[in-house]
Length: 158
Image (cartoon, rainbow, N blue to C red; front, side, top):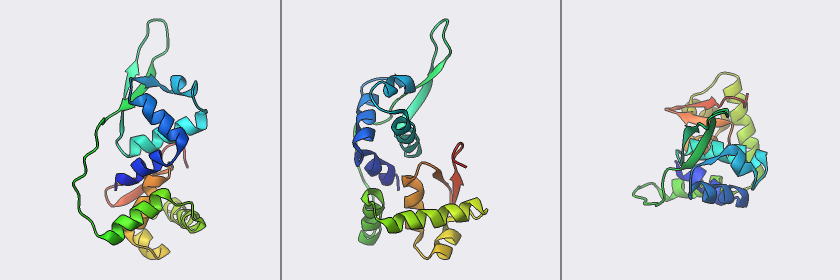
């Protein structure tokens, strides 16, 4: 399922620029903002964190406030997984589509989570989709993350 944040990242030109900068060296959020707008940077960093695609550490400079800096975790990609073609097609669709039905589905999922239902299986049953859709949408949207068999809203997105 970590393919979803990866595909979403490379399906957005702004995110791709951020990823390329992070693949060269440690970079702070402020340094990234010199090359792209803050909203894009914030959303991209959330997506990359959710996909475990970046790491972070504190940069300390004498006389200045410490800042988080980021860089990519992986410089090479190797896939060795097996899934049904139906699940693969679903992941690719969720990752790359701008279909309005996905927006409606994400709104329904958000409603379930905010009302206290965090179980992926239960949410999938209530909104009438397979659990892979619920997980995929959670991985695609910056406000959600998957923890075990449940969804959570990330801080600052409530």
